[in-house]
Length: 323
Image 1 (cartoon, helix red, strand yellow):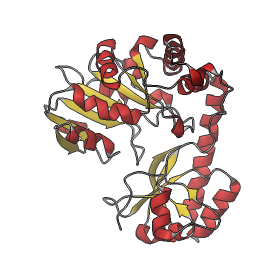
Image 2 (image 1 turned 30 degrees about the vertical axis):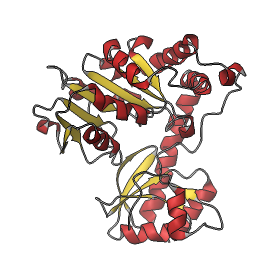
Image 3 (image 1 turned 120 degrees about the vertical axis):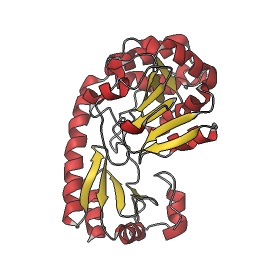
Image 4 (image 1 turned 180 degrees about the vertical axis):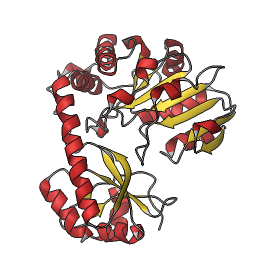
């Protein structure tokens, strides 16, 4: 079976299993199923080109939320995927290392830009790489590394990319407070805040590096509505605190469902769980036929990744399908 590169591909799922009568229960992404409530937006957010004041409101809120040295160290982009594509173009083709197994877009983007990509299993294998990418917490197994270990890799002109797409639930593990030349931290907005369709992401780095990324993205990279929603959400301390607790509880409940069905939990974050089963391929097919999409991996055929069910009914549906 040809597996999709990313989660959320319901068209491919329907081509394989047909459209379920109950509708799809999509557990194939690590997106918060309880999104941030959209605030009322002024009409100008839709009708005017985004301005510097709106950008500063967003980067200021992000700097306060993540304890960054200042808003001038933060660049907003139309999703962290755009930054993943842009970063390899900042360096001439050369040797680079990706700590894996991990999210595949990093290696694909660096290879497409002409770099020689090495997939390493330990930071001890970095060697003379001109660039290093570490997803922290890792996708899909949730592995975490101490941020000072990542910061220590900088120096000698090396670019160190810390992809913290899933770090909002565990802010103590962020490398942002340790920011220094050569370190760039990527943050996703859509996952923790549950608004992936907004397409908003961030690079946190020294101003000189952000200037080069800005040149790659061009003017007005982020829409007015995304600037406004992002500023409101990042400034909402009460929602953030409550959501961290809610996600932790939901992940524990999902673990119980998976364990009771004979799967072994081997990792994950509070936004997704990674489980292992000797017949994972058959489980994937059974769930697909029941209208439940999860994430399978061609290079790790015994593993499945599960997102969080949004309701008790969704959890019961998953439990019944797992048998």
